[in-house]
Image 1 (spheres, rainbow over the protein chains, first blue to last red):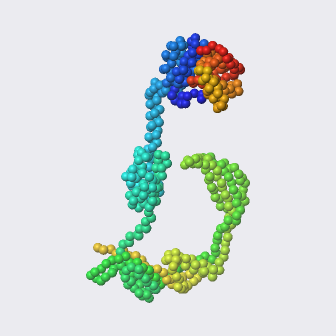
Image 2: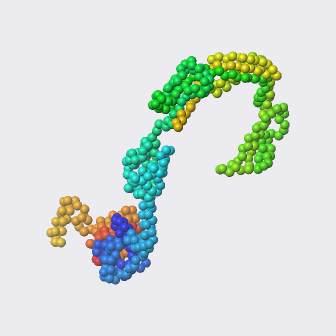
Length: 393
Length: 97
């Protein structure tokens, strides 16, 4: 045993005892049951350590043995507290700082909502506020996150799932919105009428009353599927829906040149690199003539930029690509085939890709000024329905 | 203590084989190297300096000399000394405190 237990907590003092009979004093102290330790001779007396509680029992012993003492050092918590008490406001500051840090860090400072696209963030935050999740709320007053997420899901319509995640003093509400079916487009009441003169080949009414039948001739503007149901007196208008196909004749005047010119890159190229400074460009590489008869030049500026600022400094690469022009002479058959192909693709583009060309007939054909002129009649089965809104007035 | 009592005590010691310091008031001295010294059953400090320490016993005086002697703790009749211990001398007849 070196020193009594918890001596630094109870406080102890180092004394210097001097006098004629230090030994007697030591014997008296031990006789009184006072614990002393680290007794070492020093100067004309001895220095020793003593518990603070026993300090005040020393006085009669000192008087009896005729010794003097003075305190050389004080150790332990009671002395520290006394010293701290002298600096009350400093101590209070430390305490207030600690408490403040603790309180402020156990407070929600920010609430964020993630994952919402349709439901406004404000609505979710308002619902969360009702559950007790809002800035400057104590964290310990919050409910468990699974409880919160269940209640929030019931509180906000259109939410499939809500998750609360706390990271320090900020809360992230992760939500998943319920999928909703797409809204159907609103349609006004209408008839389906014919876009052009035709012979009906197929009619199918999904909604509305079919007025024409197969193989009947219709004129442009004739009602094919009527949106008016009922008789003269009791009429109800609906949105006519359906599909009507009919045979339509298209006449095309085509002209196809017999010579076809085209250009192609030969694959030869020459690159030039420039250093660009503002308005000026200084060529770095690629000096010399390319030697191409025909060429096309493409330039690619590659300017330096810092964030969103474009700096007036950069590199520019110029590519000179050699071009070869080719001329091809077409036979009249090939020219005719090309003209027909062009006309057919025009029909498909205009009247729908599901159009079927039933027959084609070249009515007239002549070769003149290096071109082939043709007049062709196409018989096409295509969609002929067009919408006509019903206006009630 | 009467003569009979002393003889009885000596006899019980012999029979029971007890250590002397338990029955008779003799000091038990434990020395660890030349660094630490534990003395039990002393009867007070007679002299104390860093070179010499004299302790009173029931019979005689214990003289301890060395260098840098420090009483590490003292509690009742127990005493621990640290330092460089050179000599321990036991004086049978000495002045009693």
